[in-house]
Every structure is written in C-alpha cells, then in structure tokens.
Length: 299
Image 1 (spheres, rainbow, N blue to C red):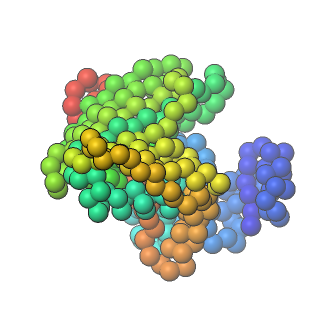
Image 2 (tube, rainbow, N blue to C red):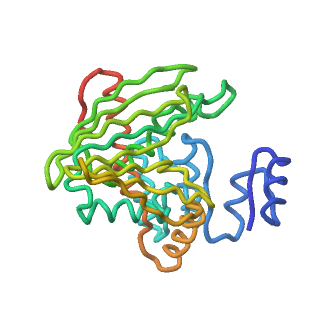
C-alpha cells in the first residue's frame, strides 16, 4: 500500500492511522508504484487527468464523485478503461449501503403503489473559504457536491429524467444553494422530483418517496454511517398507520471497497460504472444550463 499527499506531514499522519508503509509527496510517483488499484479523492477538476493517468499506468481506479466535470469527460474515461481492460468506478458510496436494497425492493414490490413524487434535501452550512468546495476552478459548488447525490438517487428510483428546471444562488463565485425540478416518464405513469441542495441552509438530509398508496421516508439517505441503524418509515394512506422498517447498520465506504475489489478480481462492471456517472453528469449539466437560462432543459 502507498499514499500520496501534497502535504507530507498530513500524509504521514494519515498513513500512521491506517498502517500504510509508503508515503509520497508526488501523485505521479504513486502511479509508478506496483499497485493493483488507486483510490482518487482529489478535487473534482483533477478527476479526469489523474484517472486517465492511473489507467495509463495500468491501475484500476475508484474515483470520488463526480467522476468528471461533464458527460463527455466521463465517456473519455470510459473509453480509456475499456481499451485497457481496467475497472473504473465512481465512488458513490451511498448506493452500496444495504438499506438501499430495502428501499428499492419496497418500490419494486409495489409497497408504495405507483411512485409519483420524490422530495429530497441535502444541506449543511459550509464554513467560509478556504475550502475546495468554494473554488470554481476546482469544480466546486453545491450542485456537484450535495446536489449530485440527490440527482443520482432520483435517477436510480425513477429512471432518466425527460427534462429539468433548476435555480441556484451564488456565493464566493460558485453555486451555494439551489433547487431542481425533474420530470420522468415512469413505466406506471409520470413521476416528478423536487430536490433542494445547499451549503447555506441548516444541516438536513432526507428523501421522501410518495406513491399512490403509501409514503416512504428515508432519513439520512446518503450518510448513514457505521452503527447508525436508522429505520425507514413506511406510512400508508388514511387509516393504514405507519411502519418502522429496520435496516442493518453498515459502513457504505467499506461496502463499496468490497464491491469494487470483487469487480476487479471478477472482471465485471462495477455497480457505479462510467456509464452511470456520465448519465448523472448529463443531468448535472442540464441543471447548469437551466439555472443560467431560466428554462426547462433536456439532459
């Protein structure tokens, strides 16, 4: 194992915590080390060059979300990975949490009836600069940070949206707050999503699925950590009461790494592959165009 950090002292501290024997202060030197795979947690704007660099060096890659800054960049990564026979996955950790298997199963089994609406929020007050999330040149902003989780979840549950309408507020040169409306042509009828994301609002994280027969409330849909067995709430129509559905506690990052390792060893596509990343980025780009032009946009 090896770790590379621009700040060698911070790198040494991290390596000591996790028993990593080799610490480097140059990312390029890390790619020269004999490793099977790399985890890439760099700022968003660096995902494309360093993922391509790792693939060129013969490494499998687990890259933080978003995989790139555009669908075109994600497709470029996908082409490089396919040509080399390597696995590249987007580190969208929430999808690997076992509670999400329960969420999707409840929807698939029709426990909500037909899905009609998704309402979601992911917000927290981000402190003032310096912080890479406030740097436009590094791919900062609330939409690509917390907003991307909401869009990913909506797509995972309702499919690909037909069109989006977005608005954003700006501070420190990036989008700091915003909301998105999405319209889907679901197999059982139209579905709409209303999503809010923010670096300015009080900390809040929730997803509500509204069907023709019941409502499912998912607390902390993206950051349920180890030890947090947070029940889902299934609420029926009038007179049907509610049910707390217990799901297992888990570390979604550990679950993700285990699944990524299985993909590398088995040679099969990862759960969060480049294609899914590209589709999510297409929606993110449509949101940006909509916010700039004040009109509905198609991804």
